[in-house]
Length: 298
Image (cartoon, rainbow, N blue to C red; front, side, top):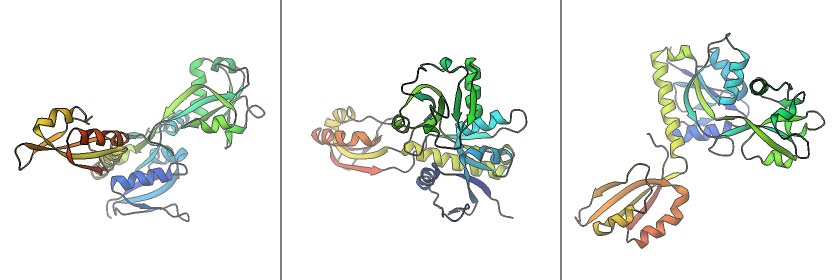
């Protein structure tokens, strides 16, 4: 039987961003609305769409060799199964979300005009959330007794009639503001992780394959928002040009056929390009080329 990795892809809000990340890493995943088993152009990987909330359980149980899910759901799974299951093994932190390449926050929010100002003010209150056990652990650390209720969705509309406060995930806070909610604390930050089953990592072939997938995914994350810049400059103008270039490490400087000229190659943040190129031209750089990056392996 051919070697295979059973890989879980998060279904739902992270699905499109995850498929795009894999594409930049060199893996093309083709998902259909009619199937939970997307095709991938790597014969050594079988994909399955699983809700992020359930991913850690299926990876821990060995149904999947590996999967992508948030640190929030890994923590929720661990809190629910303390001492009863083998923990999953994190292979890579992959900081991306539905709308951005950043972490998300689970926040404690209350109605704008409520009297609550701190978590301690909520003693005896009802908190609605999908992240029940992590929320219970948060209030336990603070020594505040509350009633935490599971929310099946539309959590933002529950205060003040169905709950006194909520713990909800947010990237920008716009949905909370639209529902006239005020954030009073951050319960936890979360980002996507590639996790693996401990048993799968004891298999040499699977370990190597998963390490390679992790390497390429991290390289794609590192390249996000960055571009390469190539240019030629006379040696007499080199110091001025170098002073304009913020490099990931140091620019690569190569000789040209004309000994009075050199070529520079470096990596910069894409958002700086529109300001940088006119300055480079004014510093007498020539042949300036901007090019996209798919991966940066550190």
